[in-house]
Structure formats: structure tokens, C-alpha cells
Image (cartoon, rainbow, N blue to C red; front, side):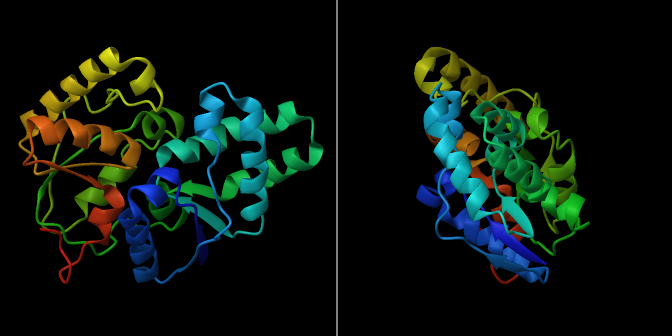
Amino acid sequence: MRISLFITCYNDTLFPQTGIAVVQVLERLGHTVDFPLAQTCCGQMHYNSGYQSEALPLVRMFVEIFRDAEVVCTPSGSCAAMVREQYPRIAAESGDPKLVAGVEALLPKVYEFTELLIKKLGIEDVGAVYPHRVTYHSSCHSLRGLRLGDIPLRLLRKVRDLELVELPESDQCCGFGGTFAVKNADTSTAMLAEKLENIAKTNAEVCTAGDNSCLMHILGGLHRRHPATKAVHIAEILASTDEGAAS
């Protein structure tokens, strides 16, 4: 299968290793990955901040760039949810029937990374090896928007040598929420403190999730309070093997 990678802004700018990990996993499973170089932001930041008119050109670009893709994969529940939940509304409000049709045709092809592995490819064991104690944070968009349920956990349970520890209140927001963390800094900090306390209870070496936006927020707190615990995207765990198991 030819899979088109939508890397997202956060990963492209700050966490390129996540995109590399996605490619490694998919190619190891026998698929071909292409990366449309013209891709840019999905428009989530603009739309959620009230700049709907500025988001529209980005929606048009996304639809045009990935129009001929067989499957689109993104290592971000947040961006996948933006496309699924908001693109139909944005297209309808634009009054452009061509855009509406383009969104309708594209939506069934768009998958979050872990969702792609299990729902589309039917694979739970990707041949990963990761000798660490790991806990999983359910990001809000993955849990409530995409309704991934236990999909990421099913993948983690199949990783050899990985000890998976349940995170207390794993369904609670970490406090990031994009611009929420900036506009409501005190509330965001309090929510992060609760998340850090729960991570500490697990004695995990690694906290993982499907969104680097959440993990960036969590990592900032861990660096100050629990520096021995890392924050690692689930794609990087699934990409790890005997030859390159993370230390």
C-alpha cells in the first residue's frame, strides 16, 4: 500500500524523529511511504483561535495536496481530529461545492498513526522491542474526537520487553490544549501538576502518547519535577527494534 505521510507542524518543526519513526514502522511492514513536500499546516491553530477565514486556504491546500492519496497517515490525533471534525463544517461554510466534494472524498482516507495500524492494516504486533517501563497518556483528541479507545494500548502490549503500567486518570487532559496553555496559564499549570503526580505514581521510565503537543507540555513538567522520566511518542516506541532499542 502507498501511504502518504502528513507530518504536522509540531513534528516537522520540533520532533522530526517522530516522522522518521512512522516511516520506519510502515516500511518495515512492507508499505511504501511518500511525503508530499508542498504540505503545510492543517489549519487547526487558526480555526480554534477564531481565525476561520485564515484557516480556509490551508484546508483547500490540504485537500488538493492529498487528493490523489491512497491513504493519509498522521502521527497526531489532534490534527486527524481537525480534519475529520472541522473540515466538513469549514467546507460547507465556504459555499464551495467543489471543496465540499473534495473533503467528502478525502476524509475516509485519513488515519491517525495507531488507528491506521489496527483499523486499516489489521496489525497489532509491529515487531517492536522496547525494554522499558511505560505509561500511556490518552490525549483529548485521540480519546474524545477520534474515539481510539484502547487501540494504542493494544499496540504497546505487543511490544517485546515493554512493561506497560496503567496511568491513573489517563483520560484527564494534561492542560496543554494549544493556545489554552497560553491564555489560561494558571489553569493549565494546575492540570499539568495533576498529570505529573499521576505519572510519578506509575514509576514509569517513559510516558508516551500519540500527540507530541501533549508530550511537549508533559516533558516540560517532567524536566522540572521528575527528570528521570522521558516523554516519547508512541511511533518511536513502535519503531524500536533489537538493533536500535532506545536506552
